[in-house]
Amino acid sequence: MHQQPVKLGCHNVWKLYGPHPERLLAGGAAPDLDAIRASGHVGAVRNVSIDVRQGEIFVIMGLSGSGKSTLVRCLSRLVEPTAGEILFNGKDLLQARPKELIDIRRHKMGMVFQHFALLPHLNVLQNVAFPLQVQGIGRAAREARAEEVIALVGLEGREAYFPRQLSGGQQQRVGIARSLVVEPELWFLDEPFSALDPLIRREMQDEFLRVQQLLHKTIVFITHDFDEAIRIADRIAIMKDGEVIQVATPEELVLNPAADYVAEFTRYVSRAKVVTLGRIAVPGAAEGAAGTLPETVRVEAVANEVEAAAAPFNVIDEDGVVIGHVTRQAVIDVLVGRGGRG
Image 1 (cartoon, helix red, strand yellow):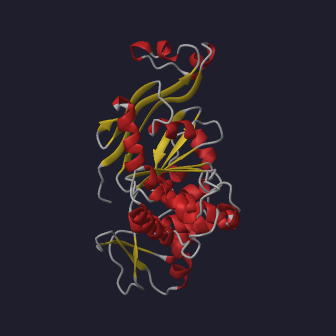
Image 2: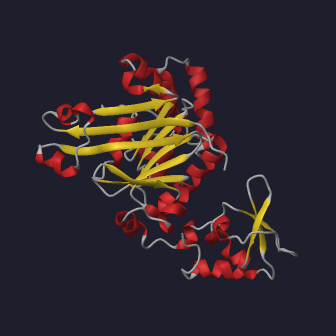
Image 3: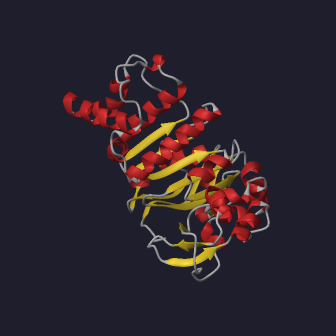
């Protein structure tokens, strides 16, 4: 895959709560968790460095209290980091003046949280158009833009509904539309679907992926649900006690966990959900192949098709070049837990 430029860079970021956090980090010190706790501080984010690339869905996950929500609030400077550097389009957000920061948030960042926070006295159209009203855009222009985004998230025909008249899934779509209306370059989503029923949640994941295919946003997405993460993520950062333990593709996390904690996190994930055809392809094209399949497709998605075919499938890269072939046996091996190991 072609490497995209870094959109958001986070370097050695700390967020410590307590009596004198700056003193604890003086002189570039990097205290461990025991030292932080012994000094009466809480290490909400500890020395985190990540790069989020243009157009990728970067998922941050961890158990409750791992620091993932605090990290995202540091990235948008809704929470002030204790130390570190956060570069957005190459500019350090920690050096931005308050007015400049407000301008960036209003025009270049979108945010969606678990609790939709819709304005109850405004209808769908007015809720979605609200960020443009804050920007001072005229009514006709902002409502025209809002109608486009409402259609994009599948709420056409409900423009005049009030939040109380909508289901949870519909309210979340309004929240997503409202965050998209400003055409953000960077989109933060903090557990946006966790309050929804499982069936609605899956529908919203599908909708989210459909919107992303159309818009190609740079997205930082928080979840504690590994199944959700592997459905949507290009890469995942696993956090524990404020620290990033590993950053990798879903496939790499499952096949090559960097620590016992990551292995435990991924222990019960079906390999077929994460192993791609590129991982199990045998080099060279197969004569009389049953067809071609992309290297990025996961085994689970094409298992029935490959198993039912009388011949192997050739596997192609993003440029359509054959990089190898995949056999029925290779797919069966992954399904029963034998294949695709790191």
